[in-house]
Amino acid sequence: MKRTLVKHALASETAQDSIRVEGWVRTRRDSKAFSFLEINDGTSLASIQVIADAGIPGYENIGKMTTGSSVSVQGRLVESPGKQKWEIQADFIALVGTAP
Image (tube, rainbow, N blue to C red; front, top):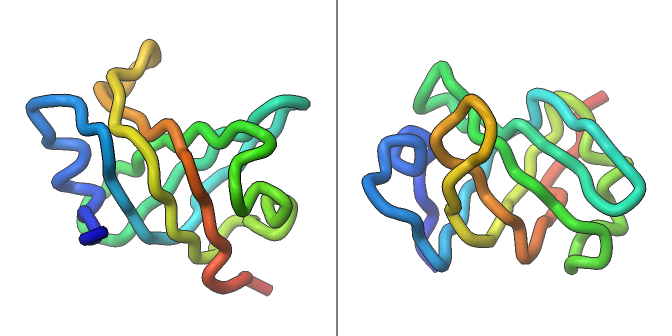
């Protein structure tokens, strides 16, 4: 699957059934059943929010996905109920590299 830049995902006119973004973790917030990650790839000042449910492939490494770590996320681009227009509902998340 081809990578989508964060700036293009944020500017999308429609939801997408399949999207892949790669970038660095700005923040991560965890709950028992899922985690929120803010991902930025340097193409925009804004980041895109990713919701990763516990149990998806790659979630076992969520504790290592700290600020500055690089990740690859595949999922669906959906309308966000929050302040931002779009967010990604992750189907797969991979830790590419950790930050010290």
